Length: 197
Image (tube, rainbow, N blue to C red; front, side, top):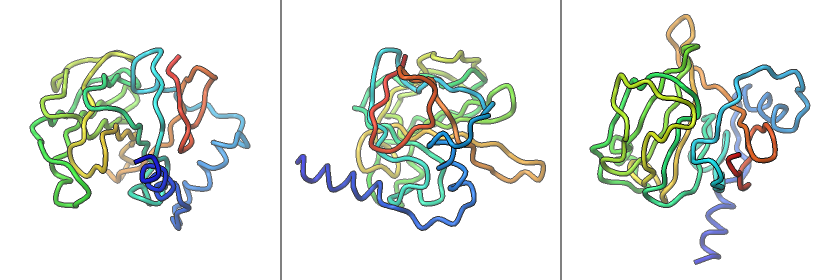
């Protein structure tokens, strides 16, 4: 089983052929080359004191080829916390199915929170009836909002997290995020374990 998991993780983190210009900027942010970063510092989307593996990161080969998204491996029922304060604008929690078939995408339970600056964060693959908030609720950074699962397009139980904004033309724009960790502020990298401070 460990060999299968190791091979699966290797496949997830293989180099991608994405030509998205944001890919190079993210590499510079992750390596610390860009020093004058004033972007918002998010909390890790799980409870204080807990640590989880980030198994798939920005532009990863498996399912994030064109995505600025993060996957945290966690057991079903793990408490998910708001990474930033805001208002809940979408909740889906009636999905029961999950797996590596595209037909399961619509079954992915999720919560979307709009932040004060207009950006939004999505928390995907929650378990059935796993939302602990409702549309219209105001949530605080670090507040428990849901329970992780494996609904939708998911190979294993995990939390899929991403942030985006809509530009002036209404087009969806992905946003790289940095987090407060037990070792300081970081842009997360695949196959690393991060502890929430």
